[in-house]
Image 1 (cartoon, rainbow, N blue to C red):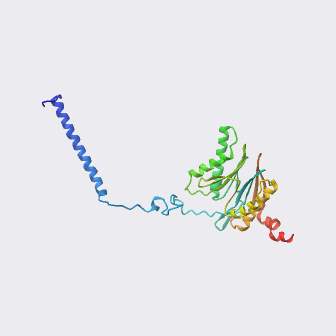
Image 2 (cartoon, rainbow, N blue to C red):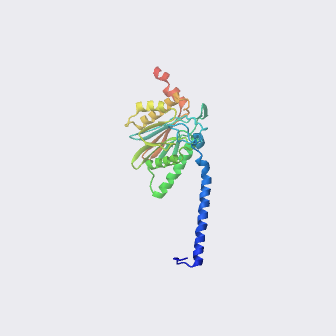
Image 3 (cartoon, rainbow, N blue to C red):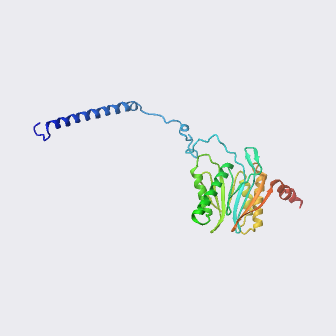
Length: 285
């Protein structure tokens, strides 16, 4: 005990504590060695198959997409279009709902009236488009109550894009157009179920969109009159329904203008064919 400044009893207590801590440390090291022993004997291991991780084993587009809904295969079939001209925006759609080759309905309302100044179109899953565009209408109304002014078309389309992006890879099927007139004029946006949002002058969405684009691009002018623009949209949808088996029914045409939107017409495709657009009628004139 020579050279120590601690009383004998405290010195013994300290030495006993140090010895006890050494025993604990040795026990912990022994437990760690026992836990790591099986892993140290493994020179390599295999990663489980990609499907068990919810990832596609293929590289490329589907690499990071979930397979949670891989058994749900949407059979798309519709034709919708919108375009901006000097007098506003024209929206034209068909009304046929299909489930593969089965025609489920001929009277689907594919233009969603979000509010008196905003319209949305429906392409993809009818339930997804209908539900989320009605939800968009609610959110737009709440925004207007908070800000004491009408929501812009850009803000409304961004709200829908934020919703669809949040549900990306959850199995939504949507290809919609949001159009309207706000304090900066007419605007048209395309929004889909991947959260993609595009601003443009002309869009057509659906299985018959390639046929509609052919007519729309050949007859479009910015200085069309309202009657000419409505006829162009109606004729583009008609030709799409004539060539695309998944489009048909009634052609609904809307005009968006400074004071809101107006439904212009609802024409049956068959009547249009036999009374106005049949090539036999043109040749007989």
